[in-house]
Length: 271
Image (cartoon, rainbow, N blue to C red; front, side, top):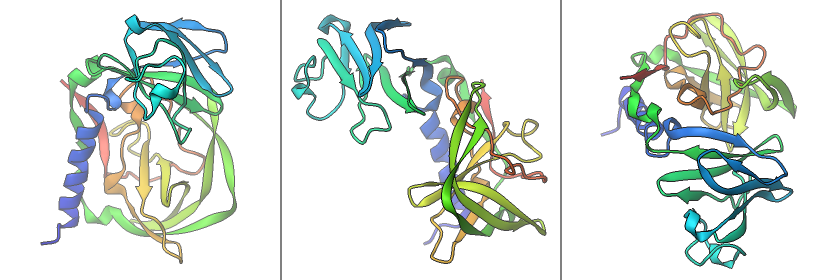
């Protein structure tokens, strides 16, 4: 028997709650530490950390207990066959196809790169936010919020500078617009590509009131005529709604809908 759209949405919603509350999910993030070219210490972590043109460098001894979880790590100087760091090692960030992840006990240490700057993210299963999590509030599923949309790409990808939640402005690469009709009115949104799918950052008349300040959307890959579907029942909270240490972009210009989109995720619930 084929699942109904409402059943598929419920499965998606349950999966979202499970993912963000996983031991190293969004709620477990306890720090994003931006690094400098000079070696330095990080709060509550052993070793010395710095950056160079290849990525993040770490100098530690075996007794510190930092392990790099990557295939073939034993070939790298400073790492034993089991990945235990004893010396100096390179950790490649998440923008590298061969990205690295390190662990320290239950902690997961994830190197990231954003606009050429490197940082180390620390995920702790014992994070207070994870312990306090009581679910994600959401509007009931309603088919009226799933509408056809048509994607029109820009002649060339564009970089739009938008504010981020950490107070800095950063470029957002956008690839085109989707056009659609909601409640009898025509609207457009600027979107980006994520693989073959489309993504966007949006706000509406519920934002900052009934829902978080802004939300993310993902659309299926458009067909050869640009046709896709905008299902606002699956508008979801950005990572920064779950932990303060994420840097999330605000919606680009024109991506605030004038109506109240009473669909999708609303807020993080706590005990």
